[in-house]
Structure formats: structure tokens, C-alpha cells
Length: 229
DNA sequence: ACATTATCCTGCACGC
DNA sequence: TGCGTGCAGGATAATG
Image 1: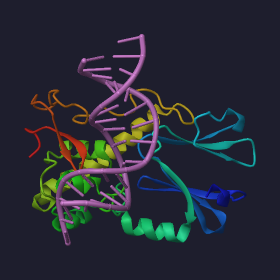
Image 2: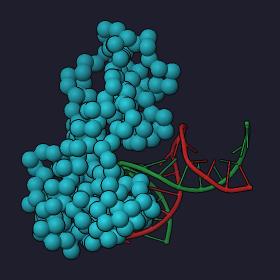
Image 3: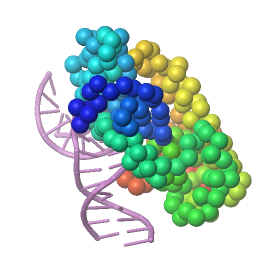
């Protein structure tokens, strides 16, 4: 598959949700999803490529692009841009930090969804790019129970949910930038302080009630049973 | 039509 | 100490 990218020019690099798109000439796109443990970065000298690299893309100067993925859940594939864009266009919701993600659009989508709030937020067709951690944090901030059926949430709460999503993502982006320590390297304390995620049994920062962990859609959800209704 | 579960894969936290 | 077991995660396929 990577044979198809040899000799191509990278025209530009884009991102849609959690998808990284390297646009190549000839209508091809090198499509990468990092999943949990993937890492993608450029190094100034291809001879410095780490031994555990899954993919090494040698550029025409000395540099190289490295794709690492310790748990191997990530994907990198070369596909026709046209079919990829059609796929992502249909499967991905609005970019949460763009103008198309508004209180109104979230409100409208919420009206026709019976999904529990947590699963709604994790559903990439609803909002692009929200994962387990930030979905839980956004729900905590807007005081919505992760189990709450989406269509049953008030207009006012949807407003604060929208605000919470944007706020959480902006803070996450900020801390990621702060933690950036060179190509492929991030310092400790990568995340901003998390209020609920990973804090099962610890006291809620707002009310001291113990944070609870439940399973939704096969994944852990953390929330405060007192603050979130 | 919907919801739950298995699958991919490996590092890590456990328990004995 | 060292081994084995099981779980975690995002997305999708398969099953109920």
C-alpha cells in the first residue's frame, strides 16, 4: 500500500476529527488515525529513526516522517482522496471548534436522538473528534448525567453542554501545546486537571461525593452521581 | 431497527 | 522475583 506513495509530493496536511490527512499529488491521500497510542512526527535526519517505528516515510531531503504505534491499533493507508472525502463527509459530524458546531445544531441533533448523552458525544457522526475523556469532562461541566437520554435534555442544558465541549477541547489543545517537547515527544502532565475521568472512588471536586464508574457501549464512563443529573 | 458484544493489539497493573 | 491474567482504549464488524 505504501508503494503507492513513493515519489509523491505532500501538497498539504489537513485534519478532520481524529483523522490526519496528508494530501498527495495524483488525487491520493495518506490517511492516518492514531487511535490510542499512535504518534506521528517528522525528524530532521532519517538515520535517527527509532527502531520501533511502524512506518518511516523518507522525504527527499534528509528528513523523515515517523509513525509509531505501540499498541498497533492505529492505521495508516493510502487511499483515493475522492472516496475518503466522501466517506468522512458522511461519517463525521461537525468540527466542534468550527463555526458549524453551534448551540442550534447541537440542539437540533439532540431532539432526534434517544442515545444516552455519553454515547451521543462519543458518536463521531454527531460531533467529530470527541473521545472518552473529554466526553466525560464535558458532561461533568454541564452537569448532565452520562445516562441521560439526549432528547430529554433541556435547551438550557444543551447550551451549557455546547459551551463545555468547546471549553474542554480548547483547554486540552492548550495543554497539549504546553506539553509539546519536540518531535513526537510530550512531557508529563499532558492533560489539564481532569474532574472525573479516571477518578473512580475519589471525591468530586464540587461536592465531595464519590466519583462513580459505569460501563456504556463497552467503555468506562466516569461521573459524579450527585452533580450530574 | 436497535443495542450489546467481539475484535484488533500491546503495555501495564494486578494477584499469587 | 517472576509469571500469568485481564483490562484499557477508538472504531467497526458481528451478533443478539
